[in-house]
Amino acid sequence: MAGIIRPHMLLSKHYARAFSALNSQIHTSCGLASKDHYKVLVLGGGSGGIAMAARIKRKVGAENVAIVEPSEMHYYQPIWTLVGAGAKSVASSGRPTASVIPSGVKWVKSKVAEFDPENNTVRTDSGKKISYDYLIVALGLELHYEKIKGLTEGFKHPKIGSNYSLQTVEKTWDALKNFKEGNALFTFPNTPVKCAGAPQKIMYLSDAFLRKTGKRSKANIFFNTSLPVLFGVKKYADALWEIVKKRDLNVNLRQNLIEVRVDEQEAVFENLDKPGETNVIKYEMLHVTPPMGPPAVLKGSSLDDAAGWLDIHKHTLQHKKYANVFGIGDCTNLPTSKTAAAVAAQSSVLDRTVSRILKKQTPDKMYDGYTSCPLVTSYNTVILAEFDYDGQPLETFPVDQSKESRIMYHMKADVMPHLYWHGLLKGVWGGPGPYRTMMHLGMK
Ligand SMILES: Cc1cc2nc3c(=O)[nH]c(=O)nc-3n(C[C@H](O)[C@H](O)[C@H](O)COP(=O)(O)OP(=O)(O)OC[C@H]3O[C@@H](n4cnc5c(N)ncnc54)[C@H](O)[C@@H]3O)c2cc1C
Image (cartoon, rainbow, N blue to C red; front, side, top):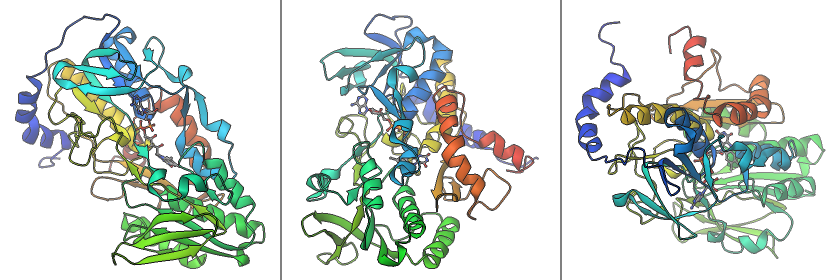
């Protein structure tokens, strides 16, 4: 095996010096565990925040960890794709936050309102200051339905839904169930999104539902996307293009939804390649994937990058300026697709990074951008896309995962929720990396 360069070697070679300079800035207050001070403070109790609290409490003791999270309920968002298509109930997607906070970890039921990394402190919306030795930021992203003219009002009417929020996901199923005749429209916004496959998964499910109920001949189906491609990774995009052709689905690239006219049942799109040109399409059903952006509290803070996302190192997940600040998940500027699967892989790297830094050692484990998207193509098939920072497929199973598969549907609908609640959130599921190596007999 001589001559093979492994990721950790690259890391030590290129980054060790930079990290030792950064890490020498960390001043901790060793053991100062009062009510408003925690050794490790986690912001956000979603997928990444809970997973990291569960992992870190094993290193520093539960009483030294706190999570700031305002919501009473925690949701497994990936299942909303199936809720919108009537295949799962919305109730099955949520559990009380209290039940997922790792035992012994303090839950601060507030929103973080301000960062002060120079003084290792945050302020909550109730005015309370909390200080920390180490900070893990896991705030997710924000949905911006309000950026589409007429949409907020539009949700009060039938025929419009969105799988992206708890409040609107069941409206998708209502619109689909009550579809009579006309255009079914599915959109993809001109911003980064979480789970970039979800905007089209609901199109395939709607197509399957309309076929099953004998209404498909009365429907024209459109996927209007701001992107110049159907999917970012060629291997899976090629497979999806075959499916859209076979099922008579219309894909319009570089079309960005800007307005919904509810009374006329019209959606207005701007042509991103021809500024000033708009296209109006009538709809009988409209599924909107909203514009998304970084949490408002991050934007303009000293922790963000130029676009407002948390500015962290793409391999170690350590903040680029503040050595005792780390990030995970959708709120970060990691250049990979924002998914819970990515969060799982990041959690095991970040666990290692923080452990090393606690011991005053240089981080040595590299996140390769692993992310995954189970592209649901019907009520019993899935294409399981898995890939890295370079858009290279990183498939777990020794089969061609770009082929539609019933087993992968079962994985998505039944196995992955279980892995989420009992693996990721307990801090014991760090993604399929080790299994991939086993399945490929150590070759990948
Ligand atoms: C329809 C849909 C389908 C999806 N499908 C898949 C899929 O098939 N596979 C997959 O892997 N992923 C999928 N995802 C994406 C996945 O759910 C997210 O990528 C993942 O949950 C991100 O985790 P996170 O911790 O970064 O953010 P989140 O889990 O969203 O958590 C962020 C948390 O921060 C809290 N918060 C926000 N602001 C503040 C504040 N100011 N102070 C304190 N707390 C705050 C929020 O309340 C929330 O609990 C899907 C998502 C959706 C919506």
